[in-house]
Image (cartoon, rainbow, N blue to C red):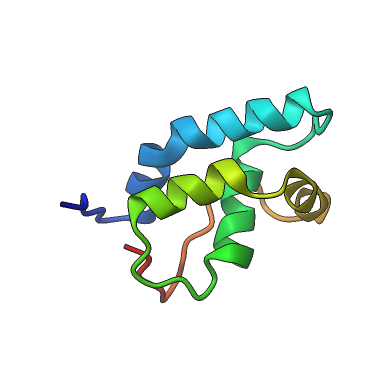
Length: 92
């Protein structure tokens, strides 16, 4: 049974360990300016933009397996360093 999340912040907190692991990987590969929030915002705005009904396992898989270069390029754009919401989409 999939857990239910009542807010984007709740989901963000749940997947934070995966986001931090991706941040560590990015830093190890030389992408020192990319933070966990950049990974989250990239996925929300690019990969999950039209996502509907994603399972928690899919979300974690996307976090851990998204191309580091794509995230780095995204993070170079001046975007707010805050949690982006999915707005109208219901990803879980």
